[in-house]
Amino acid sequence: MSSAPDSKKLAPDLSFEDAVKRLSEIVQKLEKGDLPLEQSLLLFEEGVGLSRASQEKLDSAQKRVEELLGFTSDGKPRTAPFETRGDRDG
Image (cartoon, one colour):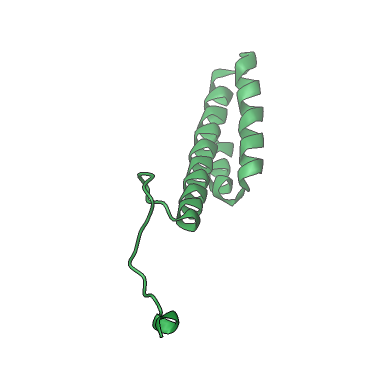
């Protein structure tokens, strides 16, 4: 049980790409099915932490894109009143 807490602490510090790469490695190891139960559980726990951290980063990126594109969280265009200048009227 010594490596899981360290892994959980590192997950938020990893880049999204590094977290996904590590998660892929964990999945491959677990799919082989030749690990002892305790080691499998530790890897699974690390994978859950990486998955959650990655999802948070994706959610944050999506929110930033929506803000830049001017859409609300439910996909509707964001509108706001704006001032017009009367320079051309006279």
